[in-house]
Amino acid sequence: MREHQDETRAAYDGVVELYASKFADRLETHPFSRNMIGTFAELVRGSGNPRAADVGCGPGHLTAMLHDLGLDAFGLDLSPGMVDHARRAHPALRFDEARMEALPVEDGALGGVLAHYSMIHTPPGELPALLAEQVRVLAPGGLLLVSFFATDGPEPVRFDHKVTPAYSWPVDRFAELLAGAGLVTFARLLHDPASERGFLDAHLLARLD
Image (cartoon, rainbow, N blue to C red; front, side, top):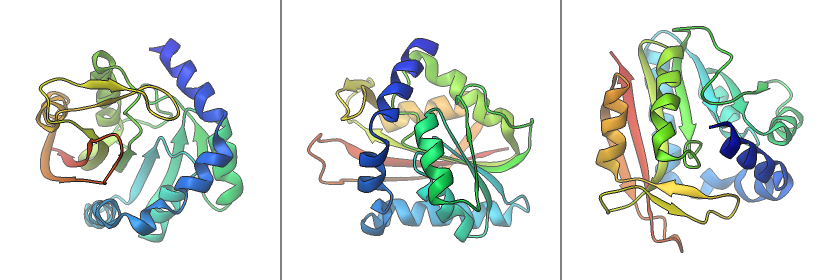
C-alpha cells in the first residue's frame, strides 16, 4: 500500500496550485455533488455528533463547506503540499497530513466522514482496509459519504487520471464493499458529468449501525 501512496502523494504535491485553481470552486457548477454533501451535513448534524473529517481534503474547499454547513469539520490529506495550501486558504480550520489507512482520530469519535473522490487511486485489493479505517473512527449511527467514478462493467477499471492512475467502480460492487465493512448504504446518486472519460459520477451515503 505504501508504494502507490508515495507515488500519489508526490503526484499531488507537484500540482497543488494548478489543482486548487481548477477545483477549489468546482462545486459551484456541480449541483449534484453539492446537494449530496448538503444532505450528508444535515444528517450528521441530526445525529447529535457534528464532528466530521474530510478525508483526502486536497486544497480544503470541502472542509470549509462542511464548516459553513454547521459541522465541526477538519481536513486530512496524504499530500503535505495540499495540507499547506489548505491551511493558508482556510486558516481558521484544522488540516493535518495523514494516510487514509491510519487516520489520526480516536475510535468512534466522528459523526461523519466525507471521502470525495479520495479513494479513487486505491487499488481494489486495498480498498477494504481503507473502508475499515473509516468505520473505526465513526460513532454508531455515523455517516460516510463516498464519491467516485462509476462504470457499467462488472469489474473496476484502471484509467489514466490526469494526476495519477485511478479506478472506476461498478456501483453495486462498491456498495458491497461498504456492507462488508459494516456500513448500510441508504442513498445513492448517479449522474453523467459529461466527462471526456465516459464515466458516471457516483455518490453513496452509508450509515454505521
